[in-house]
Length: 234
Image (cartoon, rainbow, N blue to C red):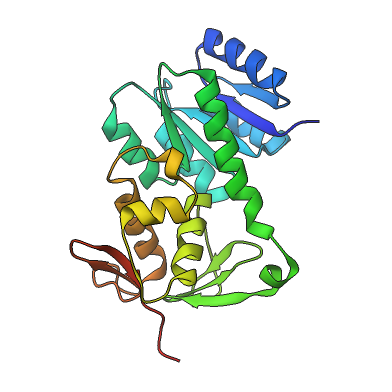
């Protein structure tokens, strides 16, 4: 059975087209046309990635993305209207891994899907990583299981892209990294949607790992340069 993808969209034509296309490329596709149907599918069989339309009637895609991110460690790709930058920003802020704007070429969607899956699958690379715990900010990150926990040991949900950013910072301590370098080092050069994407994710990470996000000590902003990870003194 192929990698399972849950498509949440109320447009039957889009559902039929993507089911045919993705099935031809080895994916197992499940369909949900509402938030209620999405929850039922998630309970029945957890997908690797949810492809989630922002413009759903009733519960919108952003609300559903927040629901998914708070409960499941799976990929989320938002589908937005053409030029709807506010939806893209909001999607990233609630924890989406990527987005694609309508109308889109199915080949681009498949490329983005593969990129998100690569990041998810890369979280358990090697026995050393599986045992390695590192402190970052006020939290502890397990590089093998990709679990982030706060000072009290409580789980802090993170997206695949957020994990990639944390790992990149850990690998380049005390180095100023530009937005361009961060995109390259996280292997997302082909993914870059717009200039603020990294800034949004850094802001989300700070809320998760910093004791005082408004006064960050772990991930500092370097004016005109980018960002720098500063490890805690040992």
